[in-house]
Length: 459
Image 1 (cartoon, one colour):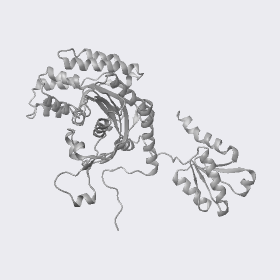
Image 2 (tube, rainbow, N blue to C red):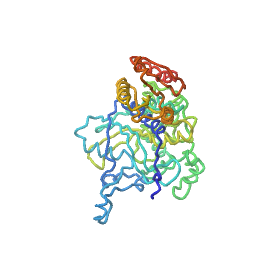
Image 3 (cartoon, one colour):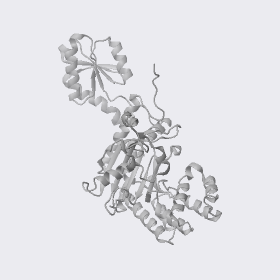
Image 4 (cartoon, rainbow, N blue to C red):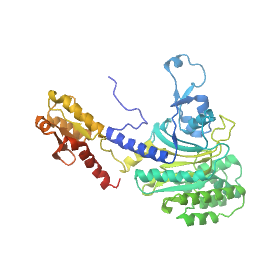
């Protein structure tokens, strides 16, 4: 007999936790739609030649290939035809390039699907996980004003999720590249390598980053590294302070000045969108490791749980689909890795299993009452209450025990005497109370009972 076991690197949840996870998905989807983003789904696998065209470094070395048993038998030399997507950005690039003449630009899309990576096994790292992305794609050009909309979406999502105080940290890759140019680090690939090291600052600490940048692989002078570390330590506290930090950078080259101008515009629009000053800040260490980011970049962290790391990140890119079309398609987007976030929140005690979304169980005491129980269940569902009907008669104690274990709050009982009075007996398992209601008032009364905890919680 084969022992049942979950494959390594996946998060499989029991129903209560799955309900909590699903509710987080619902909050994210609802807020994405409120900002005018349209849903898109792409296949779980893409053509290998398309999927592996983006220069993604380590990520592309974690690809899973998809191969049917029939194709495996006939396999010739070379890579399999299909591979599982490792993010949602490459499929988006293919999607926009393929449907370019059918889409309205700027194209505003959200996508919430699983992706797959051959991650090294470790706690909190998953091989199958949900990403929840939004992107705005322009045709030929895209105003920096769209960069300011991303923090507003982030703020709406995490405010409704209610998982604690958070800060949206912003920077601009042009600003960073301009600063490096002032230090004489002008060559593109060398800048990119330095950016990647800077992006590891929070994980590795300044001493390790200093040692790497002054080492033989980079060969930067101690003075240059000291200036880099001083630069990336800049943080703002409030809107006026953020503007002052930008003013203090001065000028010196066009790249730096453009980055400063873009960040200044984004900050002004973020304030106009109504975000509290305490919820966003400049952080010059935010670089984002992926090469395709070219302008504004974002990371969001929980103030009281910095060990969780970024809970939402993203940024601006100049050309989404250069491998698939001659059109220039600049964009800006963000991504929430929900599987990892849920796991981290659960580990930190910030999220727990939710109550069942089934509100009522119609009990069945004897076979003769089945038609009546089914009719009562249908009436409850028609009134908007999620209801299960016991289809086999059992002892009342067993039915109550089942409802309690399944997280169902109300057990409805109706014998001959209740039917004669046009009433229903209701057992409230949460309050451990039993009361009787006229059948005509049943749905409305139970809805009031269910709404009370949400009203007390301010929802």
